[in-house]
Length: 245
Length: 277
Image (cartoon, chains in turn yellow, cyan):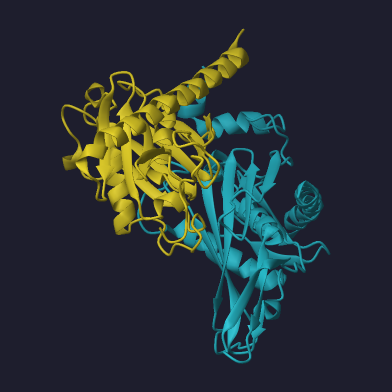
């Protein structure tokens, strides 16, 4: 595989992790004052920012609003300086439009949109530094931002990628592993119910291996959900200390 | 009660504070919000910085690329600043192509770079009419609460001071550029321009460092940019009510003291990142 050994004989990966080990996740909520909800999340070297506005009146044409539920509007963008090569278009190209659509579909599965008929919820996510797993970092950051905005959801949405190298599923791929040519699967999970909100895999894989791969991704997502939950609880604790009379 | 008064009569609400020579957020008229700076925030960029002035947050990433120098100045490199106000920074901004304010800010930053002599563009040239550096300085507002221009100038200055460029030589035999990633050099920053923004309230009261709300209620805005030798680099007053020469001089004096405060901050942060390395 292009001279790069993704998994050593001892079972270690390029960055020294074990096959099922996640990268370090650090996150903070309520980072900005203007937005209704905001969060900043680092997953290894990938840094994502999510901001939520709403629910508010639908902007633009009235025809877009739905009479029985809220419209979710997502915009994904990457900072021009987020990748090794400068990006000419931070958003609006085909790849980021696809990403925006995937995010929208993911959160339509989780947000209780029927509580806010004829309104709109805006979710803006931005990748400040990209190192693989952009989709999952965005989903995790957006979940925290939605929680921060106080928008009711069925559950946290946790996303993680998983890859398949030498008959071993690897959790939470970094950029080098993603571009190494192997299989990569992105999965967004509602961890409590175990329902899958989104699953995407665009590479060839024998179907016998699929279950193992999904299982690895789901375990990773459940691990992430604990981290996200801790972030939310810690934030609430800090806020309640500050506002105590 | 106070919240209702603020929503219904924002102007009266602000006036009632100004009568007592203070502002709704507890500041005095001539006081800036706390300013914080972080550099080397983004490792994929050649130089980066993040600045917060109160709630206003801007981030700047610099990407350097090699290109052919422009034909009208074959011995100079160039800098392309770009200010982005994405819809995530405030509900004021809509998705789509850059709005007027973002474009005006980009042009203002470009003018400040040109007029302040921040960097000697000839030092960005590697070989005359063949190869030079172009520095793309992308400034992005993450949280908009007024005083965008001051924040942009500080973040640009800090990011440029943080930037490291690899050494590039042209191989005589193959005529191709060769970059030495191991040998990285910081840019030479000749001047330190710092901006100070003011808002004119009710045609007479001058506020320093206006918030987004104060900006929208004010009758005129003014931005003064000075360098470390107290020279003016730019004075920008986009319309609004007139301002007497005396008051303008007062603003310029305030801008000069602000320059010293910010220089200290930038130097301190640059120094601390150096020792951390």
